[in-house]
Length: 132
Length: 132
Image (tube, rainbow over all chains, first blue to last red; front, top):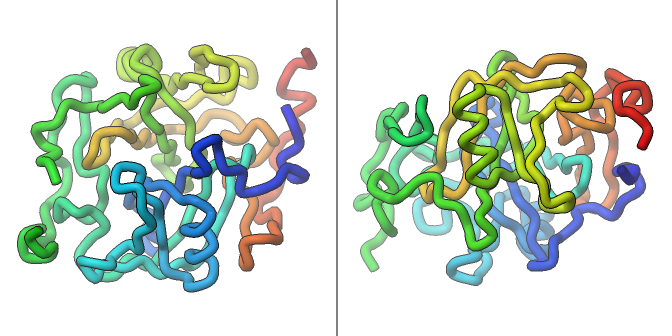
């Protein structure tokens, strides 16, 4: 195992991405996970607003650019092997999830097959996101 | 955007993996991020001990199999697009990180270039992990 202290971080993978876990700095909920390329990471550091890279849309995005639910970054952490960051943020607006929940992890399972919704929906996505 | 409630979850990617964020159920620290294939997910559900899949070693592993620092799973959550899970766990032993820290996210940055260690080392990895 290499010494993380001396490794180059962040360590972008072969797709030039790192994983980014986002945690509410106030109540400590894990809000979401997304991906960052170097541009998204650099913009997040510079602007203190969370930016990510969409693998499906193949483009940079700013969290809240459409919903207004931006994330103000309080601190940035990197993990031991350098390929994941943790952002502690102040979540503006109703929630982090585009489905209207506070967190994206609103479903839970006991048996790995059935999933229950364990959070209340806080906003109606149809009202927050413009129809395409 | 598809309705997550009706999507198949977990949604393993083209490499047959999902991301797994691990959070301390008691103090809410984000401990680590790792990867799961279906076998790791199923074993985690069944045994209530966190199991992962190592992309570098290309094998299943049980968290704590060598260190004894196992993670007892309290609850399992899945995110809106189904390709990430959140485990809330009881972390046994000194910490989650193989470098001797409580969490793998022990380094923090202000400018994105310099990284400072923001946690105390809790154990000596050389004493916990057998020399190969």
